[in-house]
Image: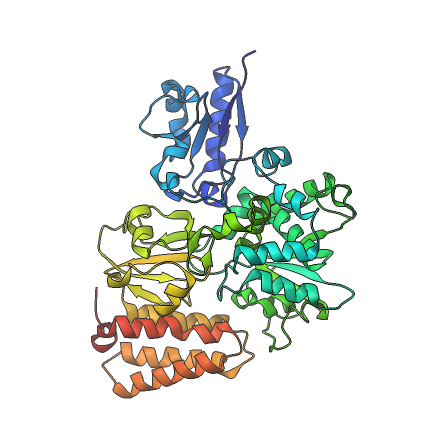
Length: 516
């Protein structure tokens, strides 16, 4: 019998939403009917979401990409000889040569879409666990020093240096310490966490284990949003496999060092993306923000020193340990070292994930990779950093996508999500959305956030409903100042950012009730 031909069909949620399961069934059925040996692997997504379901066929020289494939096209693909990599209108040539992928700097997402997500053998064959193997031979201080020297910063909001956070937890005296991964990915336009968990879950397990070795923790938790059932199932399967193969447990590969890992699901609260509200939820309480100090690094989960990082931070760690601090530090711009997985969403032609070194311009991301708007109309604004991020006008898209440049532009990079809007958008409605979002998602603990957001919606409704009011504009600015300076956490503190940016860059929308 001839050797089976390997075909990859994604199991990523984005691919599933457009029929990947049906495509997989159709390929197996067609192969059986034609007596052709096919080995089907359900991989993660490559991040080219407009091509999903993207089917790849392994040939002698490369993996050939076909997409978007629908079940009714499968027989036609077999007729054309796609198992041999033959040409077809859905064929994009070798996957690695697709321009969208070819010029990326894939460090964190190097395996995503390439390997079988639940195969340790496949993971190791592509460099997996090399970072952990090195970490097992180092002391905690040496691991922390390596991460500090790499310049790795938190891939969430403030970009705080990871090594400094870990050093604080390492130096804290306690009988128990914890590692918590904040995987409560709730920002609009973001999907990198879900993609990496569904497509390369062992990477997160490896990163968290290295973090545990660095700070002296024996127990870790992944706080995952309940809206990600496929990610939860994949990660739990990967954790079970890691325990069976001694990558987790009491004696990690004979090293005498222990780490245990569990997945906990949130209940859909946006504010639990804030680290102290997440801790409250993990402890079985209502997700409400804690006052700081004390910082979680000193008194976190159950009052113990806790290192809290998000998915993209922790999945960057194995690369740092495997290839060295200098290798990672050489990517990026200024004090923004390494790479960032940018997520392109909204009104954009080629939505998906692009991992590049810090320093690429928003213009290149939107036009070189994203292809401009899906509608074909001019870009008017892009919101960077989630629903509480600033709106950047089309005339300022040359800004560099790094922490310092974005801050100088009055914006924030956040989780790397970008939502594009064309010239039909009404910015007074977007400003209102930010205030309404805060009103709905506020934990209610502090007055500026709880009450200020409601008052903000009322003011914006008055402006939209009739005419221009200097008094209302002044009142809105005062309200934004109070929320930004007096809110207990970033939920209320950042809500003014999209409102103020909309007022600054698109004042005509608030003056005349602009219509599309």
